[in-house]
Length: 291
Image 1: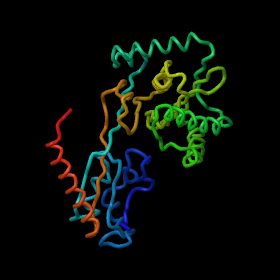
Image 2: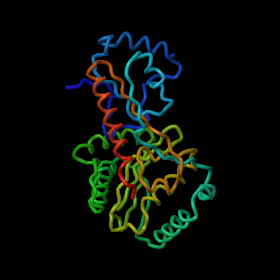
Image 3: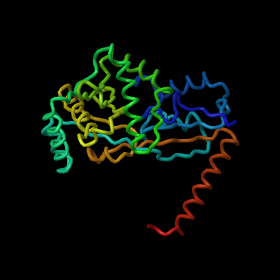
Image 4: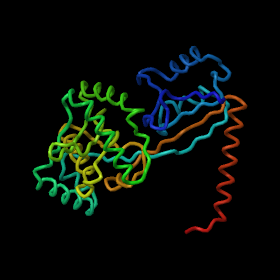
């Protein structure tokens, strides 16, 4: 099969903002020298195709790529966006950034929750509660998607063990922001975030479909933002995905790109084939009536 050189962990649910991992004080020249020393084959690095997925336009790897792989056929495409919300100092200032509709919705659903003493919103901070909470997150996430008739790749059998381990590490380092909604002491919703570089990073969420009228997702995000602002957070990053609920909070987003670089004739043929298919599709679309 086609030999591919790519970032470690670059799968469908890989991290956003991928890049080479190196301290800023290490020069580009030093990184290029290290690559030349480590590259198994100078002609093609032992691969037919290099795939640099989920990178920002100014990622260091994009700057280095022309020197790492000179005189090669390139294909660069925007593959996704990451909406984000700059955080001010307090909720009052935050609400000034939101639409009238969104402010009204947040206040209305918060009042509903506050008037019902059976609701509790808290943060999972006890290590003994972590494994059960991660499993509940998966269960509720899948319940919600099943209720909507949609499929999800956030599957406990495949990914549960990893998230239990990484959540435990982040909890010890005070980087885990794992919010929970209880109703009569039963978990009905979770918001699973990380905290890094004064930014709240949205990882995943899960909610019981029977409680949709309470807007649990928005309330947990508001709780995360408020706690974040109290502790110096400057941004809430919704991460990759174009879901409509994110744009109720913000109109700002960062673009993610995937660059493919052909190192052999096999890789070049694949890029040429894909380029041809893209042009054919664009040509055909000209003759399809718009709805």
